[in-house]
Amino acid sequence: MTHPVEISFVSNENAALAGRKGRIAILVPEGGRLPGGLPRPAREAALRALASDAWKGMKPGQALELAFPAAMAAEALQLVLLPRRADPAVARKAGAAIGARLGKSEAVVVAGDHPRAAEVALGLALRAYDFSAYKSRKADESEAAEPEAAKGRVTFMHKDPEALAHKATDGAALAEGVFFTRDLVNEPANVLTTSDFADRLLAMQELGLEVEVLDEDELAKLGMRALLAVGQGSESPSKVVVMRWNGGGDEAPLALVGKGVVFDTGGISIKPSAGMEEMTMDMGGAGVVAGVMRTLALRRAKANVVGLVGLVENMPDGKAQRPGDIVKSMKGDTIEVINTDAEGRLVLADVLWYAQERFQPKAMIDLATLTGAVIIALGHENAGVFANDDGFANQFLAAAKAEGEGAWRLPLSPGYDELINSRLADIKNTGGRPAGSVTAAQFLHRFVKKDVPWIHLDIAGVALPPGATDLAPKGATGWGVMALNRLVRDRFEAAD
Image 1 (tube, rainbow, N blue to C red):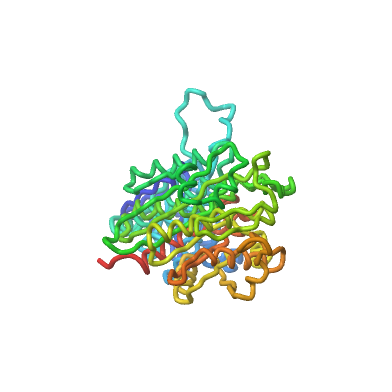
Image 2 (cartoon, rainbow, N blue to C red; image 1 turned 90 degrees about the vertical axis):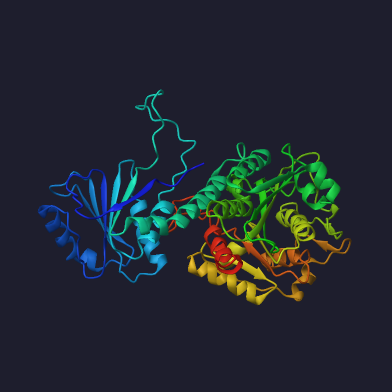
């Protein structure tokens, strides 16, 4: 997998910057005070920059760069505006400004005694992500050469490096989890098959997770006919993977459930060809669940969390399910398939029911790139949040806000049930275009027991936005890993 850039922490006492190669970034608080260690010509140039209209027009978290500063070996000197009382989101944005320009050469971040330096390190790591697994070696690189790191090493100079390193530990685990999710979502479907996905999750047993893979025979015995129907036209076998982190004693777990459609053609209700290549991201919900579980294991979270993902591929084939088919879910409800491209809710229906039957969770959250309708409603700024419990919804929304991950609550109401009532079965899998994201959530609500607090997150707009974000280059964002990790930490972990 792609690993975050290597960051070390050293004392800033007697920090001589003139001979430092690569890039140097300085956290500049309000007032524009510069640290010692800069040679006089570079210091004078930096002071001129701080007095310029360009600097005066900058917002906290933004940076101004001086190329090849005088009397220094560095190729660039970056001045990053970061008030001492900046909130975590601004500090991460400041780090991202550094990470976005990070090259293969080494870099130094002069952090002084800034109280938000750990958040700067996290933002730097997240924005420096680079998925280059399929980029061919450049012509001037030797075939026998050792593989080169995608990004250079970063050194933070700080007044108290040991304390900063300790504060940055959880951030490092979080970055690993986000990167794991991004890698999964960015992978092509000819590589990330259902079997390869399951193998990557099994490998996390080395972190202390309990991982179990249920194959098609086991799923059939359990009655997961809705899930199996989605994948019956694919050569890739359908699977359910269960990941357990038991860090909270005898407490009932929080259950996280993810949609893992490794590629979605739409099936017999085939999608238009334009843009279909992006349907490699239709396993984004499962990717987030996997990233959260990796983070919890790496930071040894004092909570019980079970992550379940349904892995299928939705392909057109002589064996594929058809519009008009009726399938029976694990719950026992029958479902009329109106559109085979509304397949993710069939997968989630069975996995949600299985999670409740087996684990009796204290609460449950599912994530899915479920509907295009949520993008029409919220664009790429917010995930859609649906919930049957106001208190639980507010806890999640607070966690998402604290982590800077956009989320907006949308309604559930019995009135929408009329749109998914079926003439032939208990329910149909789509109610058409009106309120498409709401009827999808209303469908899932049928498979949630009355006494289980539940949230459905439709992440279709935020998993793979069309451009770069504050903390991610163009491509997969890993949205949700940070918010869910915060929710677990704040609401489900045992107190020390």
